[in-house]
Image: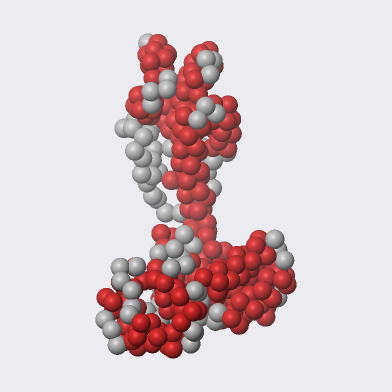
Length: 355
């Protein structure tokens, strides 16, 4: 670790900002920033003052690598034990790390999760209380570490606290924490589950049903992206299997009144046809494209972008944002024209099937 990394590590371990260190050293914040970015080096008098301030020797200040690596190793060890569900060992390792580095955000954050998982999976309320206390400490430390905040946001810590309160059956407090961390409605389902436990079914059910629909749409978006990757990588059979599975799953989500699902299946069948052309299975590709046209015509006969077209939706009327094409038939054409891998063959089949 270089000197600039060492100064940054020591400052963060103290839970200090660059401005606070600058004030303590009687220099400008810009000077501290330059030290930590490697743009300048403190003179020997300032180095001595830094060593005194951080209560380390000059040798330790210049050669802080061992201690920093030790902290990183301890954090990695805690994380590994949590993943392995060795909760007793994880909390023991967390206690030792906290004793050595009580003001390190990384240590406090990993310790929070170690105690949290121990409490939730082993039904240990005392560990959940400890996790909540550590989470509050992590929230303080993260506000003092702007670099760390880029990777772990305060909202994620609020969500952890919501989980811990929910496992303690403190649902009102859980909802408060979830709402504080509810960026882009990511905690809506967790909030609704807590509302269900409180008997607030009228508030919970719309959120839960919306979560079902949002999950289906996200699954579709992930699947179509994965199919493009698989086709481009030569894994055609995997792409075909993925489309087939998702089409069957979507069948169960279609309402009797007609649905956007028909347009989703149109795109899946078209991509499946692309994969089959790449494999030289022209007859199968034609069958898949015929299915795509059938779904497209079904949708275009009574187009609906309402989420109410999904089965198991009991919320207010909302519309789906769609950029696949003005119609389902135009979505087929766009899908064919977008990629070079099977464009000519699919254009010919598409034109013939429409004649």
